[in-house]
Length: 326
Image (cartoon, rainbow, N blue to C red; front, side, top):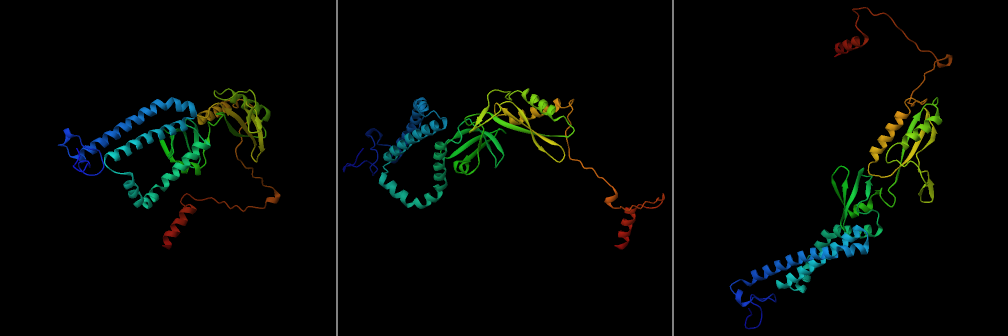
C-alpha cells in the first residue's frame, strides 16, 4: 500500500505493504519479512557449505583451510541476507555507514584483539605449523593433546586429559609448540641407566638393546632414520654416555612408531630392561660414600661414661635447665 505521494505506507523507503494486509502495522510486517530473510539466508548458507564441501576439500586438501573457506562462504551468505533484511526495514547503507563512523573509535578498541587473532589465524593457516589431527605439546603448560579445530580466531586442542583447550591464535604464535605428527610420526626416546664399574658393561648394553626391541611399538630395526642431513640407527642402541662419580651412565635410544602413548611405551621399556638385568652380571649404581680414617685424618675426641639407672639423660637435663631459667 502506498500513499498519494507514492511513498510506502509507514514512511521510509522499505518494503511496501500489500493491500490485503492493510490491517497489519507496516513496521511489524517489515520486521517479520526481515526475520524470514535472515532465516532463509542462514539455511541457505548451510546448504551452500554442504554442496561446496567436497569441491573445496579437493581443491585445498588441508582440512583446516577447507573449513576456513567454507566458514567464510557461509558468513558471506548470512551477511548478504542481513543486508537484504536491512533494506526491507528501510535502513539505507549510507545511514549505516554514518552510524558506524560514530562508534568507530570504541569498536576499534574492542575489536583490536579480535582483529589480531584473525591476522594470526591467517599466518597459522599459511605457515602450517600444525594441522587438524596432529598431536602437539605445549611446554609452557605441559599439555599434550590433539588439534581438534583451527579457525581464524583460535585453535581448539583436545587434551589427553579429556578436556578442551581453546587458545587464541595470537597466543599460539607467541609460544613454543612441539608437533609430534609433522611429516614423520616416529619419535625418538631415551633412557639413562647408571650401573656400577664392576658390572659387565658389554653384557649390559646387549641386554638393554634386546629388552627394548621386544616391546611392542618400538622399531626393532631397518634402514636408518633421516633427520635433516643426519641419519640415525632405527634399532634400539645403547651407548656409554659418561663415566660418572658413582658408576657408568648408559644411554638407551630407541624409536617409537607412534607418539600417542609415549609414557606407556617408556614404562614398558623400563620394565623389560629391569627384568632383563635381574640375573645378569650387572648391578644398578646408586650414590654412596666411603669414609677412610688414617694417620693423616687427625684425631676425634670421644668421651663415654656409664649412666646410672636414676640419672637423667643429657637432653632431659638440658630441658630441665631451660625450665628453671624461665
